[in-house]
Length: 370
Image (tube, rainbow, N blue to C red; front, side, top):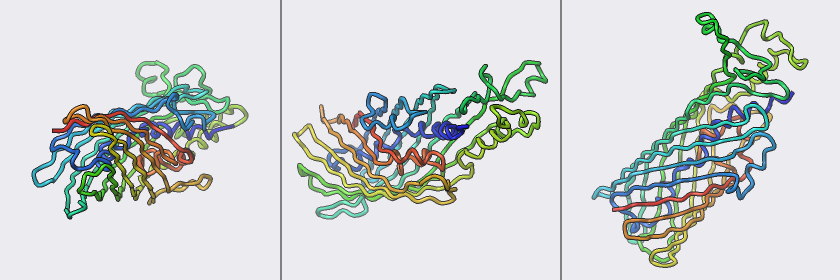
């Protein structure tokens, strides 16, 4: 009986919540020259992944469950004081959808990420400025409920009519007499972390500008699962045979395949080479190449799966300045190993196989500055 796809459902809810949620304000801070920034800024950006935009055929890597669509909307505000100390606040709201050939046929997740940073130049030389940024970020995923789940030919429920194994809500039955069945799984997830970025930028505003960024981030990831049916000790229910297999053995196998519920930490080190090339006074091209190295602690490895610790990123985009206060931009973000090192909440001992594939996403944004 193929129970491994239950893993995919349990973790993909977290995976989708992290779709496209890498901070775009950090991209602007990396590639834009200081002369193009304002004392007070408002940034708005929308990111999207869909089947029509899947230029790397990421979704086609999966024969079962696959991502269908993901959207992120990010807004940020920053203010720079006269002493060049800069405060930035950012929030993005992301949602993701996935489709499956079996029950449940559709799942949707939503999450919110808050980002706060403080930055300042600590060395200002004749040719280069060294800017140091400290940041904090937190991601909260909305609870996700899976009513019924199909494993092979067996449906575990839930209130769906197809359920072969289901658990009655005894409290409701005792009080009202109504037969209400408990969902297979309720999931929640969150991550909390901090880090720093060191940016090295030239003071001259040439047609071609080359900058460098060194970054570090540490996040603690917490996942939790509520499933009365997987944890049931009811001997009658566990003794039922479905498809020649005891229900208890099936439920235990599904429970053991869930990601760990004890928190773990992920640390990532990043180096970025950032370029901006001015075509005209109002149009510029930009590129950013990043190398990410990841390490983990208190992380329970899966002996049957490979873990990944390296990622190569490439951002290609353009800027257009319709007026002195508005900067419009678009970019295509490509990565060799999905969101590795960018969204810690997406990676766990059961979802790690997804990070063996490249990924691409499209952004359109604006920067309003005063």
